[in-house]
Image (tube, rainbow over all chains, first blue to last red; front, side, top):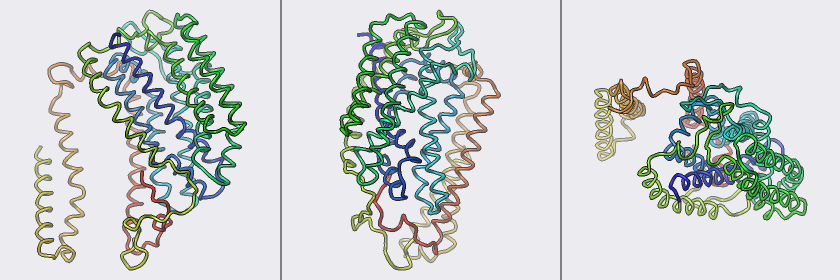
Length: 351
Length: 127
């Protein structure tokens, strides 16, 4: 197999991993204003993703870096063409990160509500922008013969791309509810299960419509045949239907597995529909960027392959270890820290 | 370069004086030194920033020495206005976050601060 095809596939794996993992912590963020009722429950929801969200974000960094190194022409066109969209995305990413750190640094209800909403809006915004951004790769953006983006921010909004953003939001909210069902307990768990049932049907319908629409766009606008693209789309539709069914019957571990499969299938459908191009040009289809034209030199790709083969198992191992360490259900109860970590309970030195 | 070297030497001197005072067991009592150490918090940042400014300015007009000029390296699809907008966003955002950070650190540094929920035994969560 050619190395550039290998790297295209690897980048799809990175995007899939990113949305599979970070998708549920975006979902938890979106549900923050609606599901918990007490301060303790809000804390429990933050804690359910607290130790893992930044590890999940590593996948985005890797996906971006892999595009930069393996397909510099793709990176150059996408990151300068989507300049304002990515600026907005960075804004959401930055304020969301801060919300995790600062919410517990103050006691006033207003302070805590502020950072809860910052997290919720950031999570929703990131999912929306990514949905719109990635859908534009296949829907087509105005490129000139030099591969330079000739549009502006408004050119990224089409019915298909905006719908893709909304589908991402609903899918991740449902994915996040299923994750919370695995990680919470007590009254919070009861309300999480209600939320999962509320989200199941809308997420399934939006996901299905997005997958069907993606196949149509791939055929109409990217000169693809129905056949290979329809396979991941069908897998995704089946997984989402099963996820909804399982959520209603309370089998949330399987429901979470199915939303994970659905998320990966959605990414796979997008990129299968995109291949062999990496960015479709519209209206001048001939200016589209393709895998061969955007790729780095063979030597660069060979070096990257060696690095990736060494680094990937390490990343997978430490992330799996993180999830293993924090596998217990979150009760929201107060936990006695180990003696070595206990803050001084008396004396003037406290604080 | 000179700024980076000066602040680097100053940091080293502060550390050396601190080590000497620690050895003499006078570290906690030497108020003048503790003040100097607080001023010293800024030095690593000044040194790093000065170093960056030096490398970025020193290699002009190249962005990759000998290969690519800065004037050829910018994105044609990103105009000056959008660069101003993005720079403004980052400056504004980090200004707000920096001020909030300062307020929080000040609050936490006060010796008479009442214990917050975080100091009480809550789940030991570290991110």
